[in-house]
Every structure is written in structure tokens, then in C-alpha cells.
Image 1: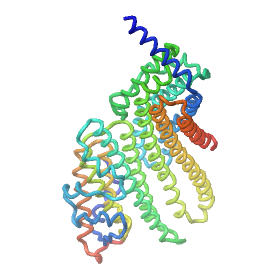
Image 2 (image 1 turned 90 degrees about the horizontal axis):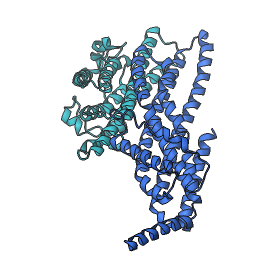
Image 3 (image 1 turned 45 degrees about the vertical axis):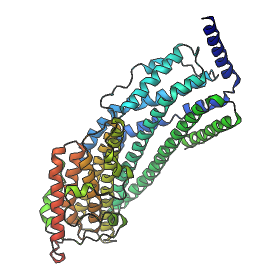
Image 4 (image 1 turned 60 degrees about the horizontal axis):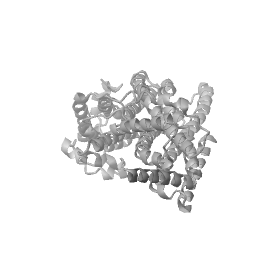
Amino acid sequence: MARRVLVLVGLLVAGCASTGQVSLGEVREFADASARLGRYAELSRRYRDTYERESPYLSPQGERVARDTDARRRAVFDDFVAIQKTLVLYMQTLSSLAGDGRYDLSGRIDDLGSGLKAMTDSGLQQRHVAAYTGMTRLLTRVITSRYQNRSVDTMVRDGNADVQTLIDAMTVLTRIYEKANENERKTVLGLFNAEIPMANRNTDRMLVTLAKVHLQNKTAEYKLIDRRYKLAQQGLTKVALGHQKMRENMDKLSSEETRHMLAGYVHDLNLIRDALSGE
Amino acid sequence: MATSSHSNTDQASDEADTTLPSATPRQEAASSLPNQPPTPDAIVTTVTPGMPPAAADGHDVDGATRANALSNMQCVVDLADSVVCIADDLHERILQEIAGYNDRTMPDAQKALMRALTDDERLLRQYAHALYADAATFVIQDLKEPQHRLMALTAEAAEKIRRIGVIGEVTGLVGGILLLVGSIARGQFSQVGAALKKIQLHNAALKTLKPDSTART
């Protein structure tokens, strides 16, 4: 019995020592950079509001179909955002565990309570829902225990599978957002491309001029949004890869190679974030 | 019921004729499609070019639920993509018709037809939106057959829309496609068969009529 206790204490000490010795600076920076990839919610909102933007361009028949689609988009919006919020909270918690006290997570537990509402008819597949549940459980445990007995490597090891699944869900959704944006662009711009050349009477001149200005603005708008969707997908891929690599190299976090690799992901994520916010 | 705003023109357009060249890369790869309306079996084995590869692979997955769910989701996205494809080609054909007038003023009747067709184009895009929303929100079941049929029809119909001699002839075809896509987008699979028949009849009529019997609008 005494020996068993000794072994246990030894393991605990070893665990503490291993976390204590490594430099967690890169882990913290990676978690920070991942948590700040924050424009995802804005892109989800943009998708949710497709109908509002499109409706002036639709025929009555198209309008009817569009209204129905609008209701379906709105019904699941909260779930899409909940997934993103959970991932952000995970990254913030990881950052706190790695020694950064900048995030006050005490009030954030409430965000995790409700689970995904539209579980039965959400397109999120069963594995996405399971990952969400697993992740919220992990976060609740870590945050309510005030990080006691939780180390960075336990968190990363326990969380990796769910992180990967949730990022996968977000990536799939972002691809769909991107496709819907392209379809919307063609709906809106297509109308002008057909109408402008048909309006060639003298009395149409003012109208045609206004239409051309509108067309220019809308063309620029859709190009910008398309770029954001692409950047968001790149960012998600980087977060997924970075976390996976961290998981694989947990036992050699302090090695030059691992630190360099993580720093590389941080660099890329910051570039993507700057590109997203600099427009 | 999703019907074209021009279903009344079906009769007229069925009397028309068109030649059906198959010169584009998309059509070349789809050249395994028989000249007559293909049987469902023939369609199912056809891989439509220009579509994401998953569209061709998806129906092989019968194993784990997860794989099924993924393939169904991809299936719906591919369906939506192919609807967008048809709308794109219809749009190109409309612009081409308009450009043909150069600086001449288009007669009002022709303008009305163009506008009706752009309405159809945008209605097709709304169905694509509905399918994208489906893909994002829930996994549709039993979509394999309509998917493959629509994929096969896409290449043929889109090419026809671009090549068709007189644009008025497009309306019957677009009406059939709208019915098909609308049925699928709203999960009314019982109507899919009727819609396919409509499109196939229209295609058959277009093919069998001689060029000199072309009805000009």
C-alpha cells in the first residue's frame, strides 16, 4: 500500500515537474491566436441573413422558396455559433492553463449549459453533437475546478479528438457558406448583367448609371466576403493541424523543433487574422 | 408544385427543333449518355464531369452511419452545385441572346421573355440555396437516385440551353428542370418521377423534330 502511494506521489511529482520544466509560451500563444480567430461568428451571421439581402431581387415565386429557406437557416444558427463559442472557450482555457491569466472564464460556464438545441434535425452529425457534449464536459470540469490538477498535456490529450471533430463541423459549414455566397452573388449581379444591356433608351440613362454604380459596389462586396470565407477555412485548417501536432508532441513540448513548429502556426494564424480584420 | 413560369409554352417549344452538338469538355465526358432519354440505370452509372468527385463516390458508401451521413451531406451539396450549374448556363444563354441585339432595341415581347427566363434562373438559384441549407441543417435520406439523375441531366440540359437555336425553346426544358429541382428541394420525391418524364419527353421532342420545322418566336 505504502509503495503504491509512493508511486502515485512520484507520478504526480513527475507530472508537475514535466509541466513545470517545459516552456508553455508557444502553447499559450497558439491557444491565444486560435481563440482570436473571431470573425467566424460574423460569417455565420452573414449566411443567416442571406434572405434579407436577396429578397429585393427575387420574383414572387423565388421569394416564397427563399422565405422557407430563411426559416431553416435561422433555426440552426444558434447551434452553429455554439460550436464556435465552445472552441474559443477551449482555447482560452488552454491559454489560462499555460500560464496566461488574461481570460476570466468564471462567467463563461453558463454559456455551455444548454447543449445543442436542434439535435434531432441539426445537420450537425451525431459525432459533432457527441464532440460538443464531450468538449463542454471537459471545459466545465477544468474551469469549475479552477484548473487544479489539470495540466496542459491532459487538456490537450483529452480534448484533441473533440477539437478536431468540431473544427471539421465548422469547416464543412464554412464551405457551405461560401457556396451560398457565390450563389447569392450570381442572383444579385446576374439581374443587372441582364437588365443593363436591355435598357438602352435615352430615358433609361439615369437608371442605368445608378444600376452600374450599384453593380460595382455589390461586386466589391461579394469579392470581399468570398475572401473572408476562404481565409476562415485556412484559419480553421491551421488550428486543427496545430492542435494535432501539439497532441503528438506533448512529451517534447520544450524541444526546439516543437516550439518552432508551434510558433509557425501562431505566425500563420496571426497573418490570417490580420488579413481578416484589415479589410 | 414547382412549375416554370412558362409551363404554357411547353407545347410550342416541343414543336421546335435544335441540333445538339456535344463539343464542350463537359459534354464530351458525358457523351456516354444515349441520344434518347436515358433509362434510370444508364443514368445512375454515368459520372457527370465537372462535379466534385464525391458525387461519383458517394453512393458506394453503405457501411458506417457516419460515412453514410457524410456521403448524404456531400450528396446534397453536389445536387445544389449541379442546380447552380444549370442556372449558370441559362444565364450565359440569356446574356448571349441579349448581346445579339447589339445597340438595337429589343422588342417588348422579347424583353418579357428574357425577364421571365431570368426569373426562372433566380428561382433555380433559390432551390440551390434550399439544398445548401438542407446540407447545412439536416441529412436528407433517399436522395441517391434523384441525385444521379439530376447530375446526368445537368450536362445534357445545360449544353442544350447554351446551344439551342431559338431562346423561346428553352422555356419548356427549364420548366421541367424547375419542377424536378423544386420537388427535390422540398423533399417531394413522389413528384420526381413525373418531373423527369417531363424533361425526357421534352428532350425527345427536341431531338426528333427536323431543323427546318424550327418555330421562331
